[in-house]
Image (cartoon, rainbow, N blue to C red; front, side, top):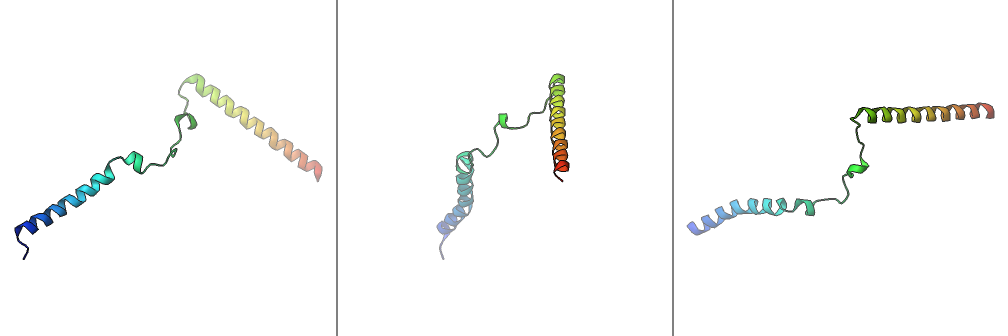
Length: 84
């Protein structure tokens, strides 16, 4: 038989191996497992307007875009009708 020293060594390995593994993989996570430029920068994301003027200007912008796309669609339909 191994004796008490072997049992103490085995117990130490059983305890220290998971702790050492967690310490190794748990430190410097930002450098080790990060993908550069994975998340968009704040200026690249959508910004929700909260102020009344910002909401009105955003609604006006959406309305102008919708009207522009409608005019473009009607013009395409008119052109297709003339070609037939």
